[in-house]
Length: 122
Image (cartoon, rainbow, N blue to C red):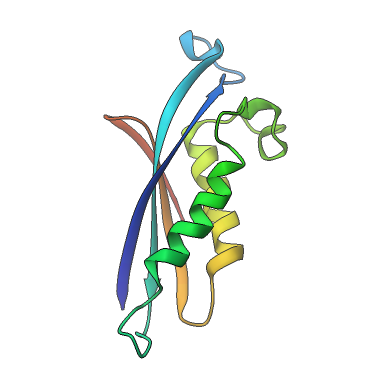
């Protein structure tokens, strides 16, 4: 089994719903996102998945969040756009795009700061 990880980022605003404290107010983050996939076998080029494809799919998905007010986006209408919920959303969407007989999205980690992160995995 092979484990491959890429890192990307996006910037967006949000506020936490049903939360008492500073983060209930509108604020923003420069989120960093780690996407980890596993591959059972390598292709003829010796790759589990082409990093180019993994980066492309992640970038396209993150563009739907970048420089947006997350609370107004469909995935977060019924769920507060916390780092936990963002990581779950990204995991689900990337799984739909990338999972195959050989490749599986294992975990997505969303960093809201240099010292705070949330990871979703199944």
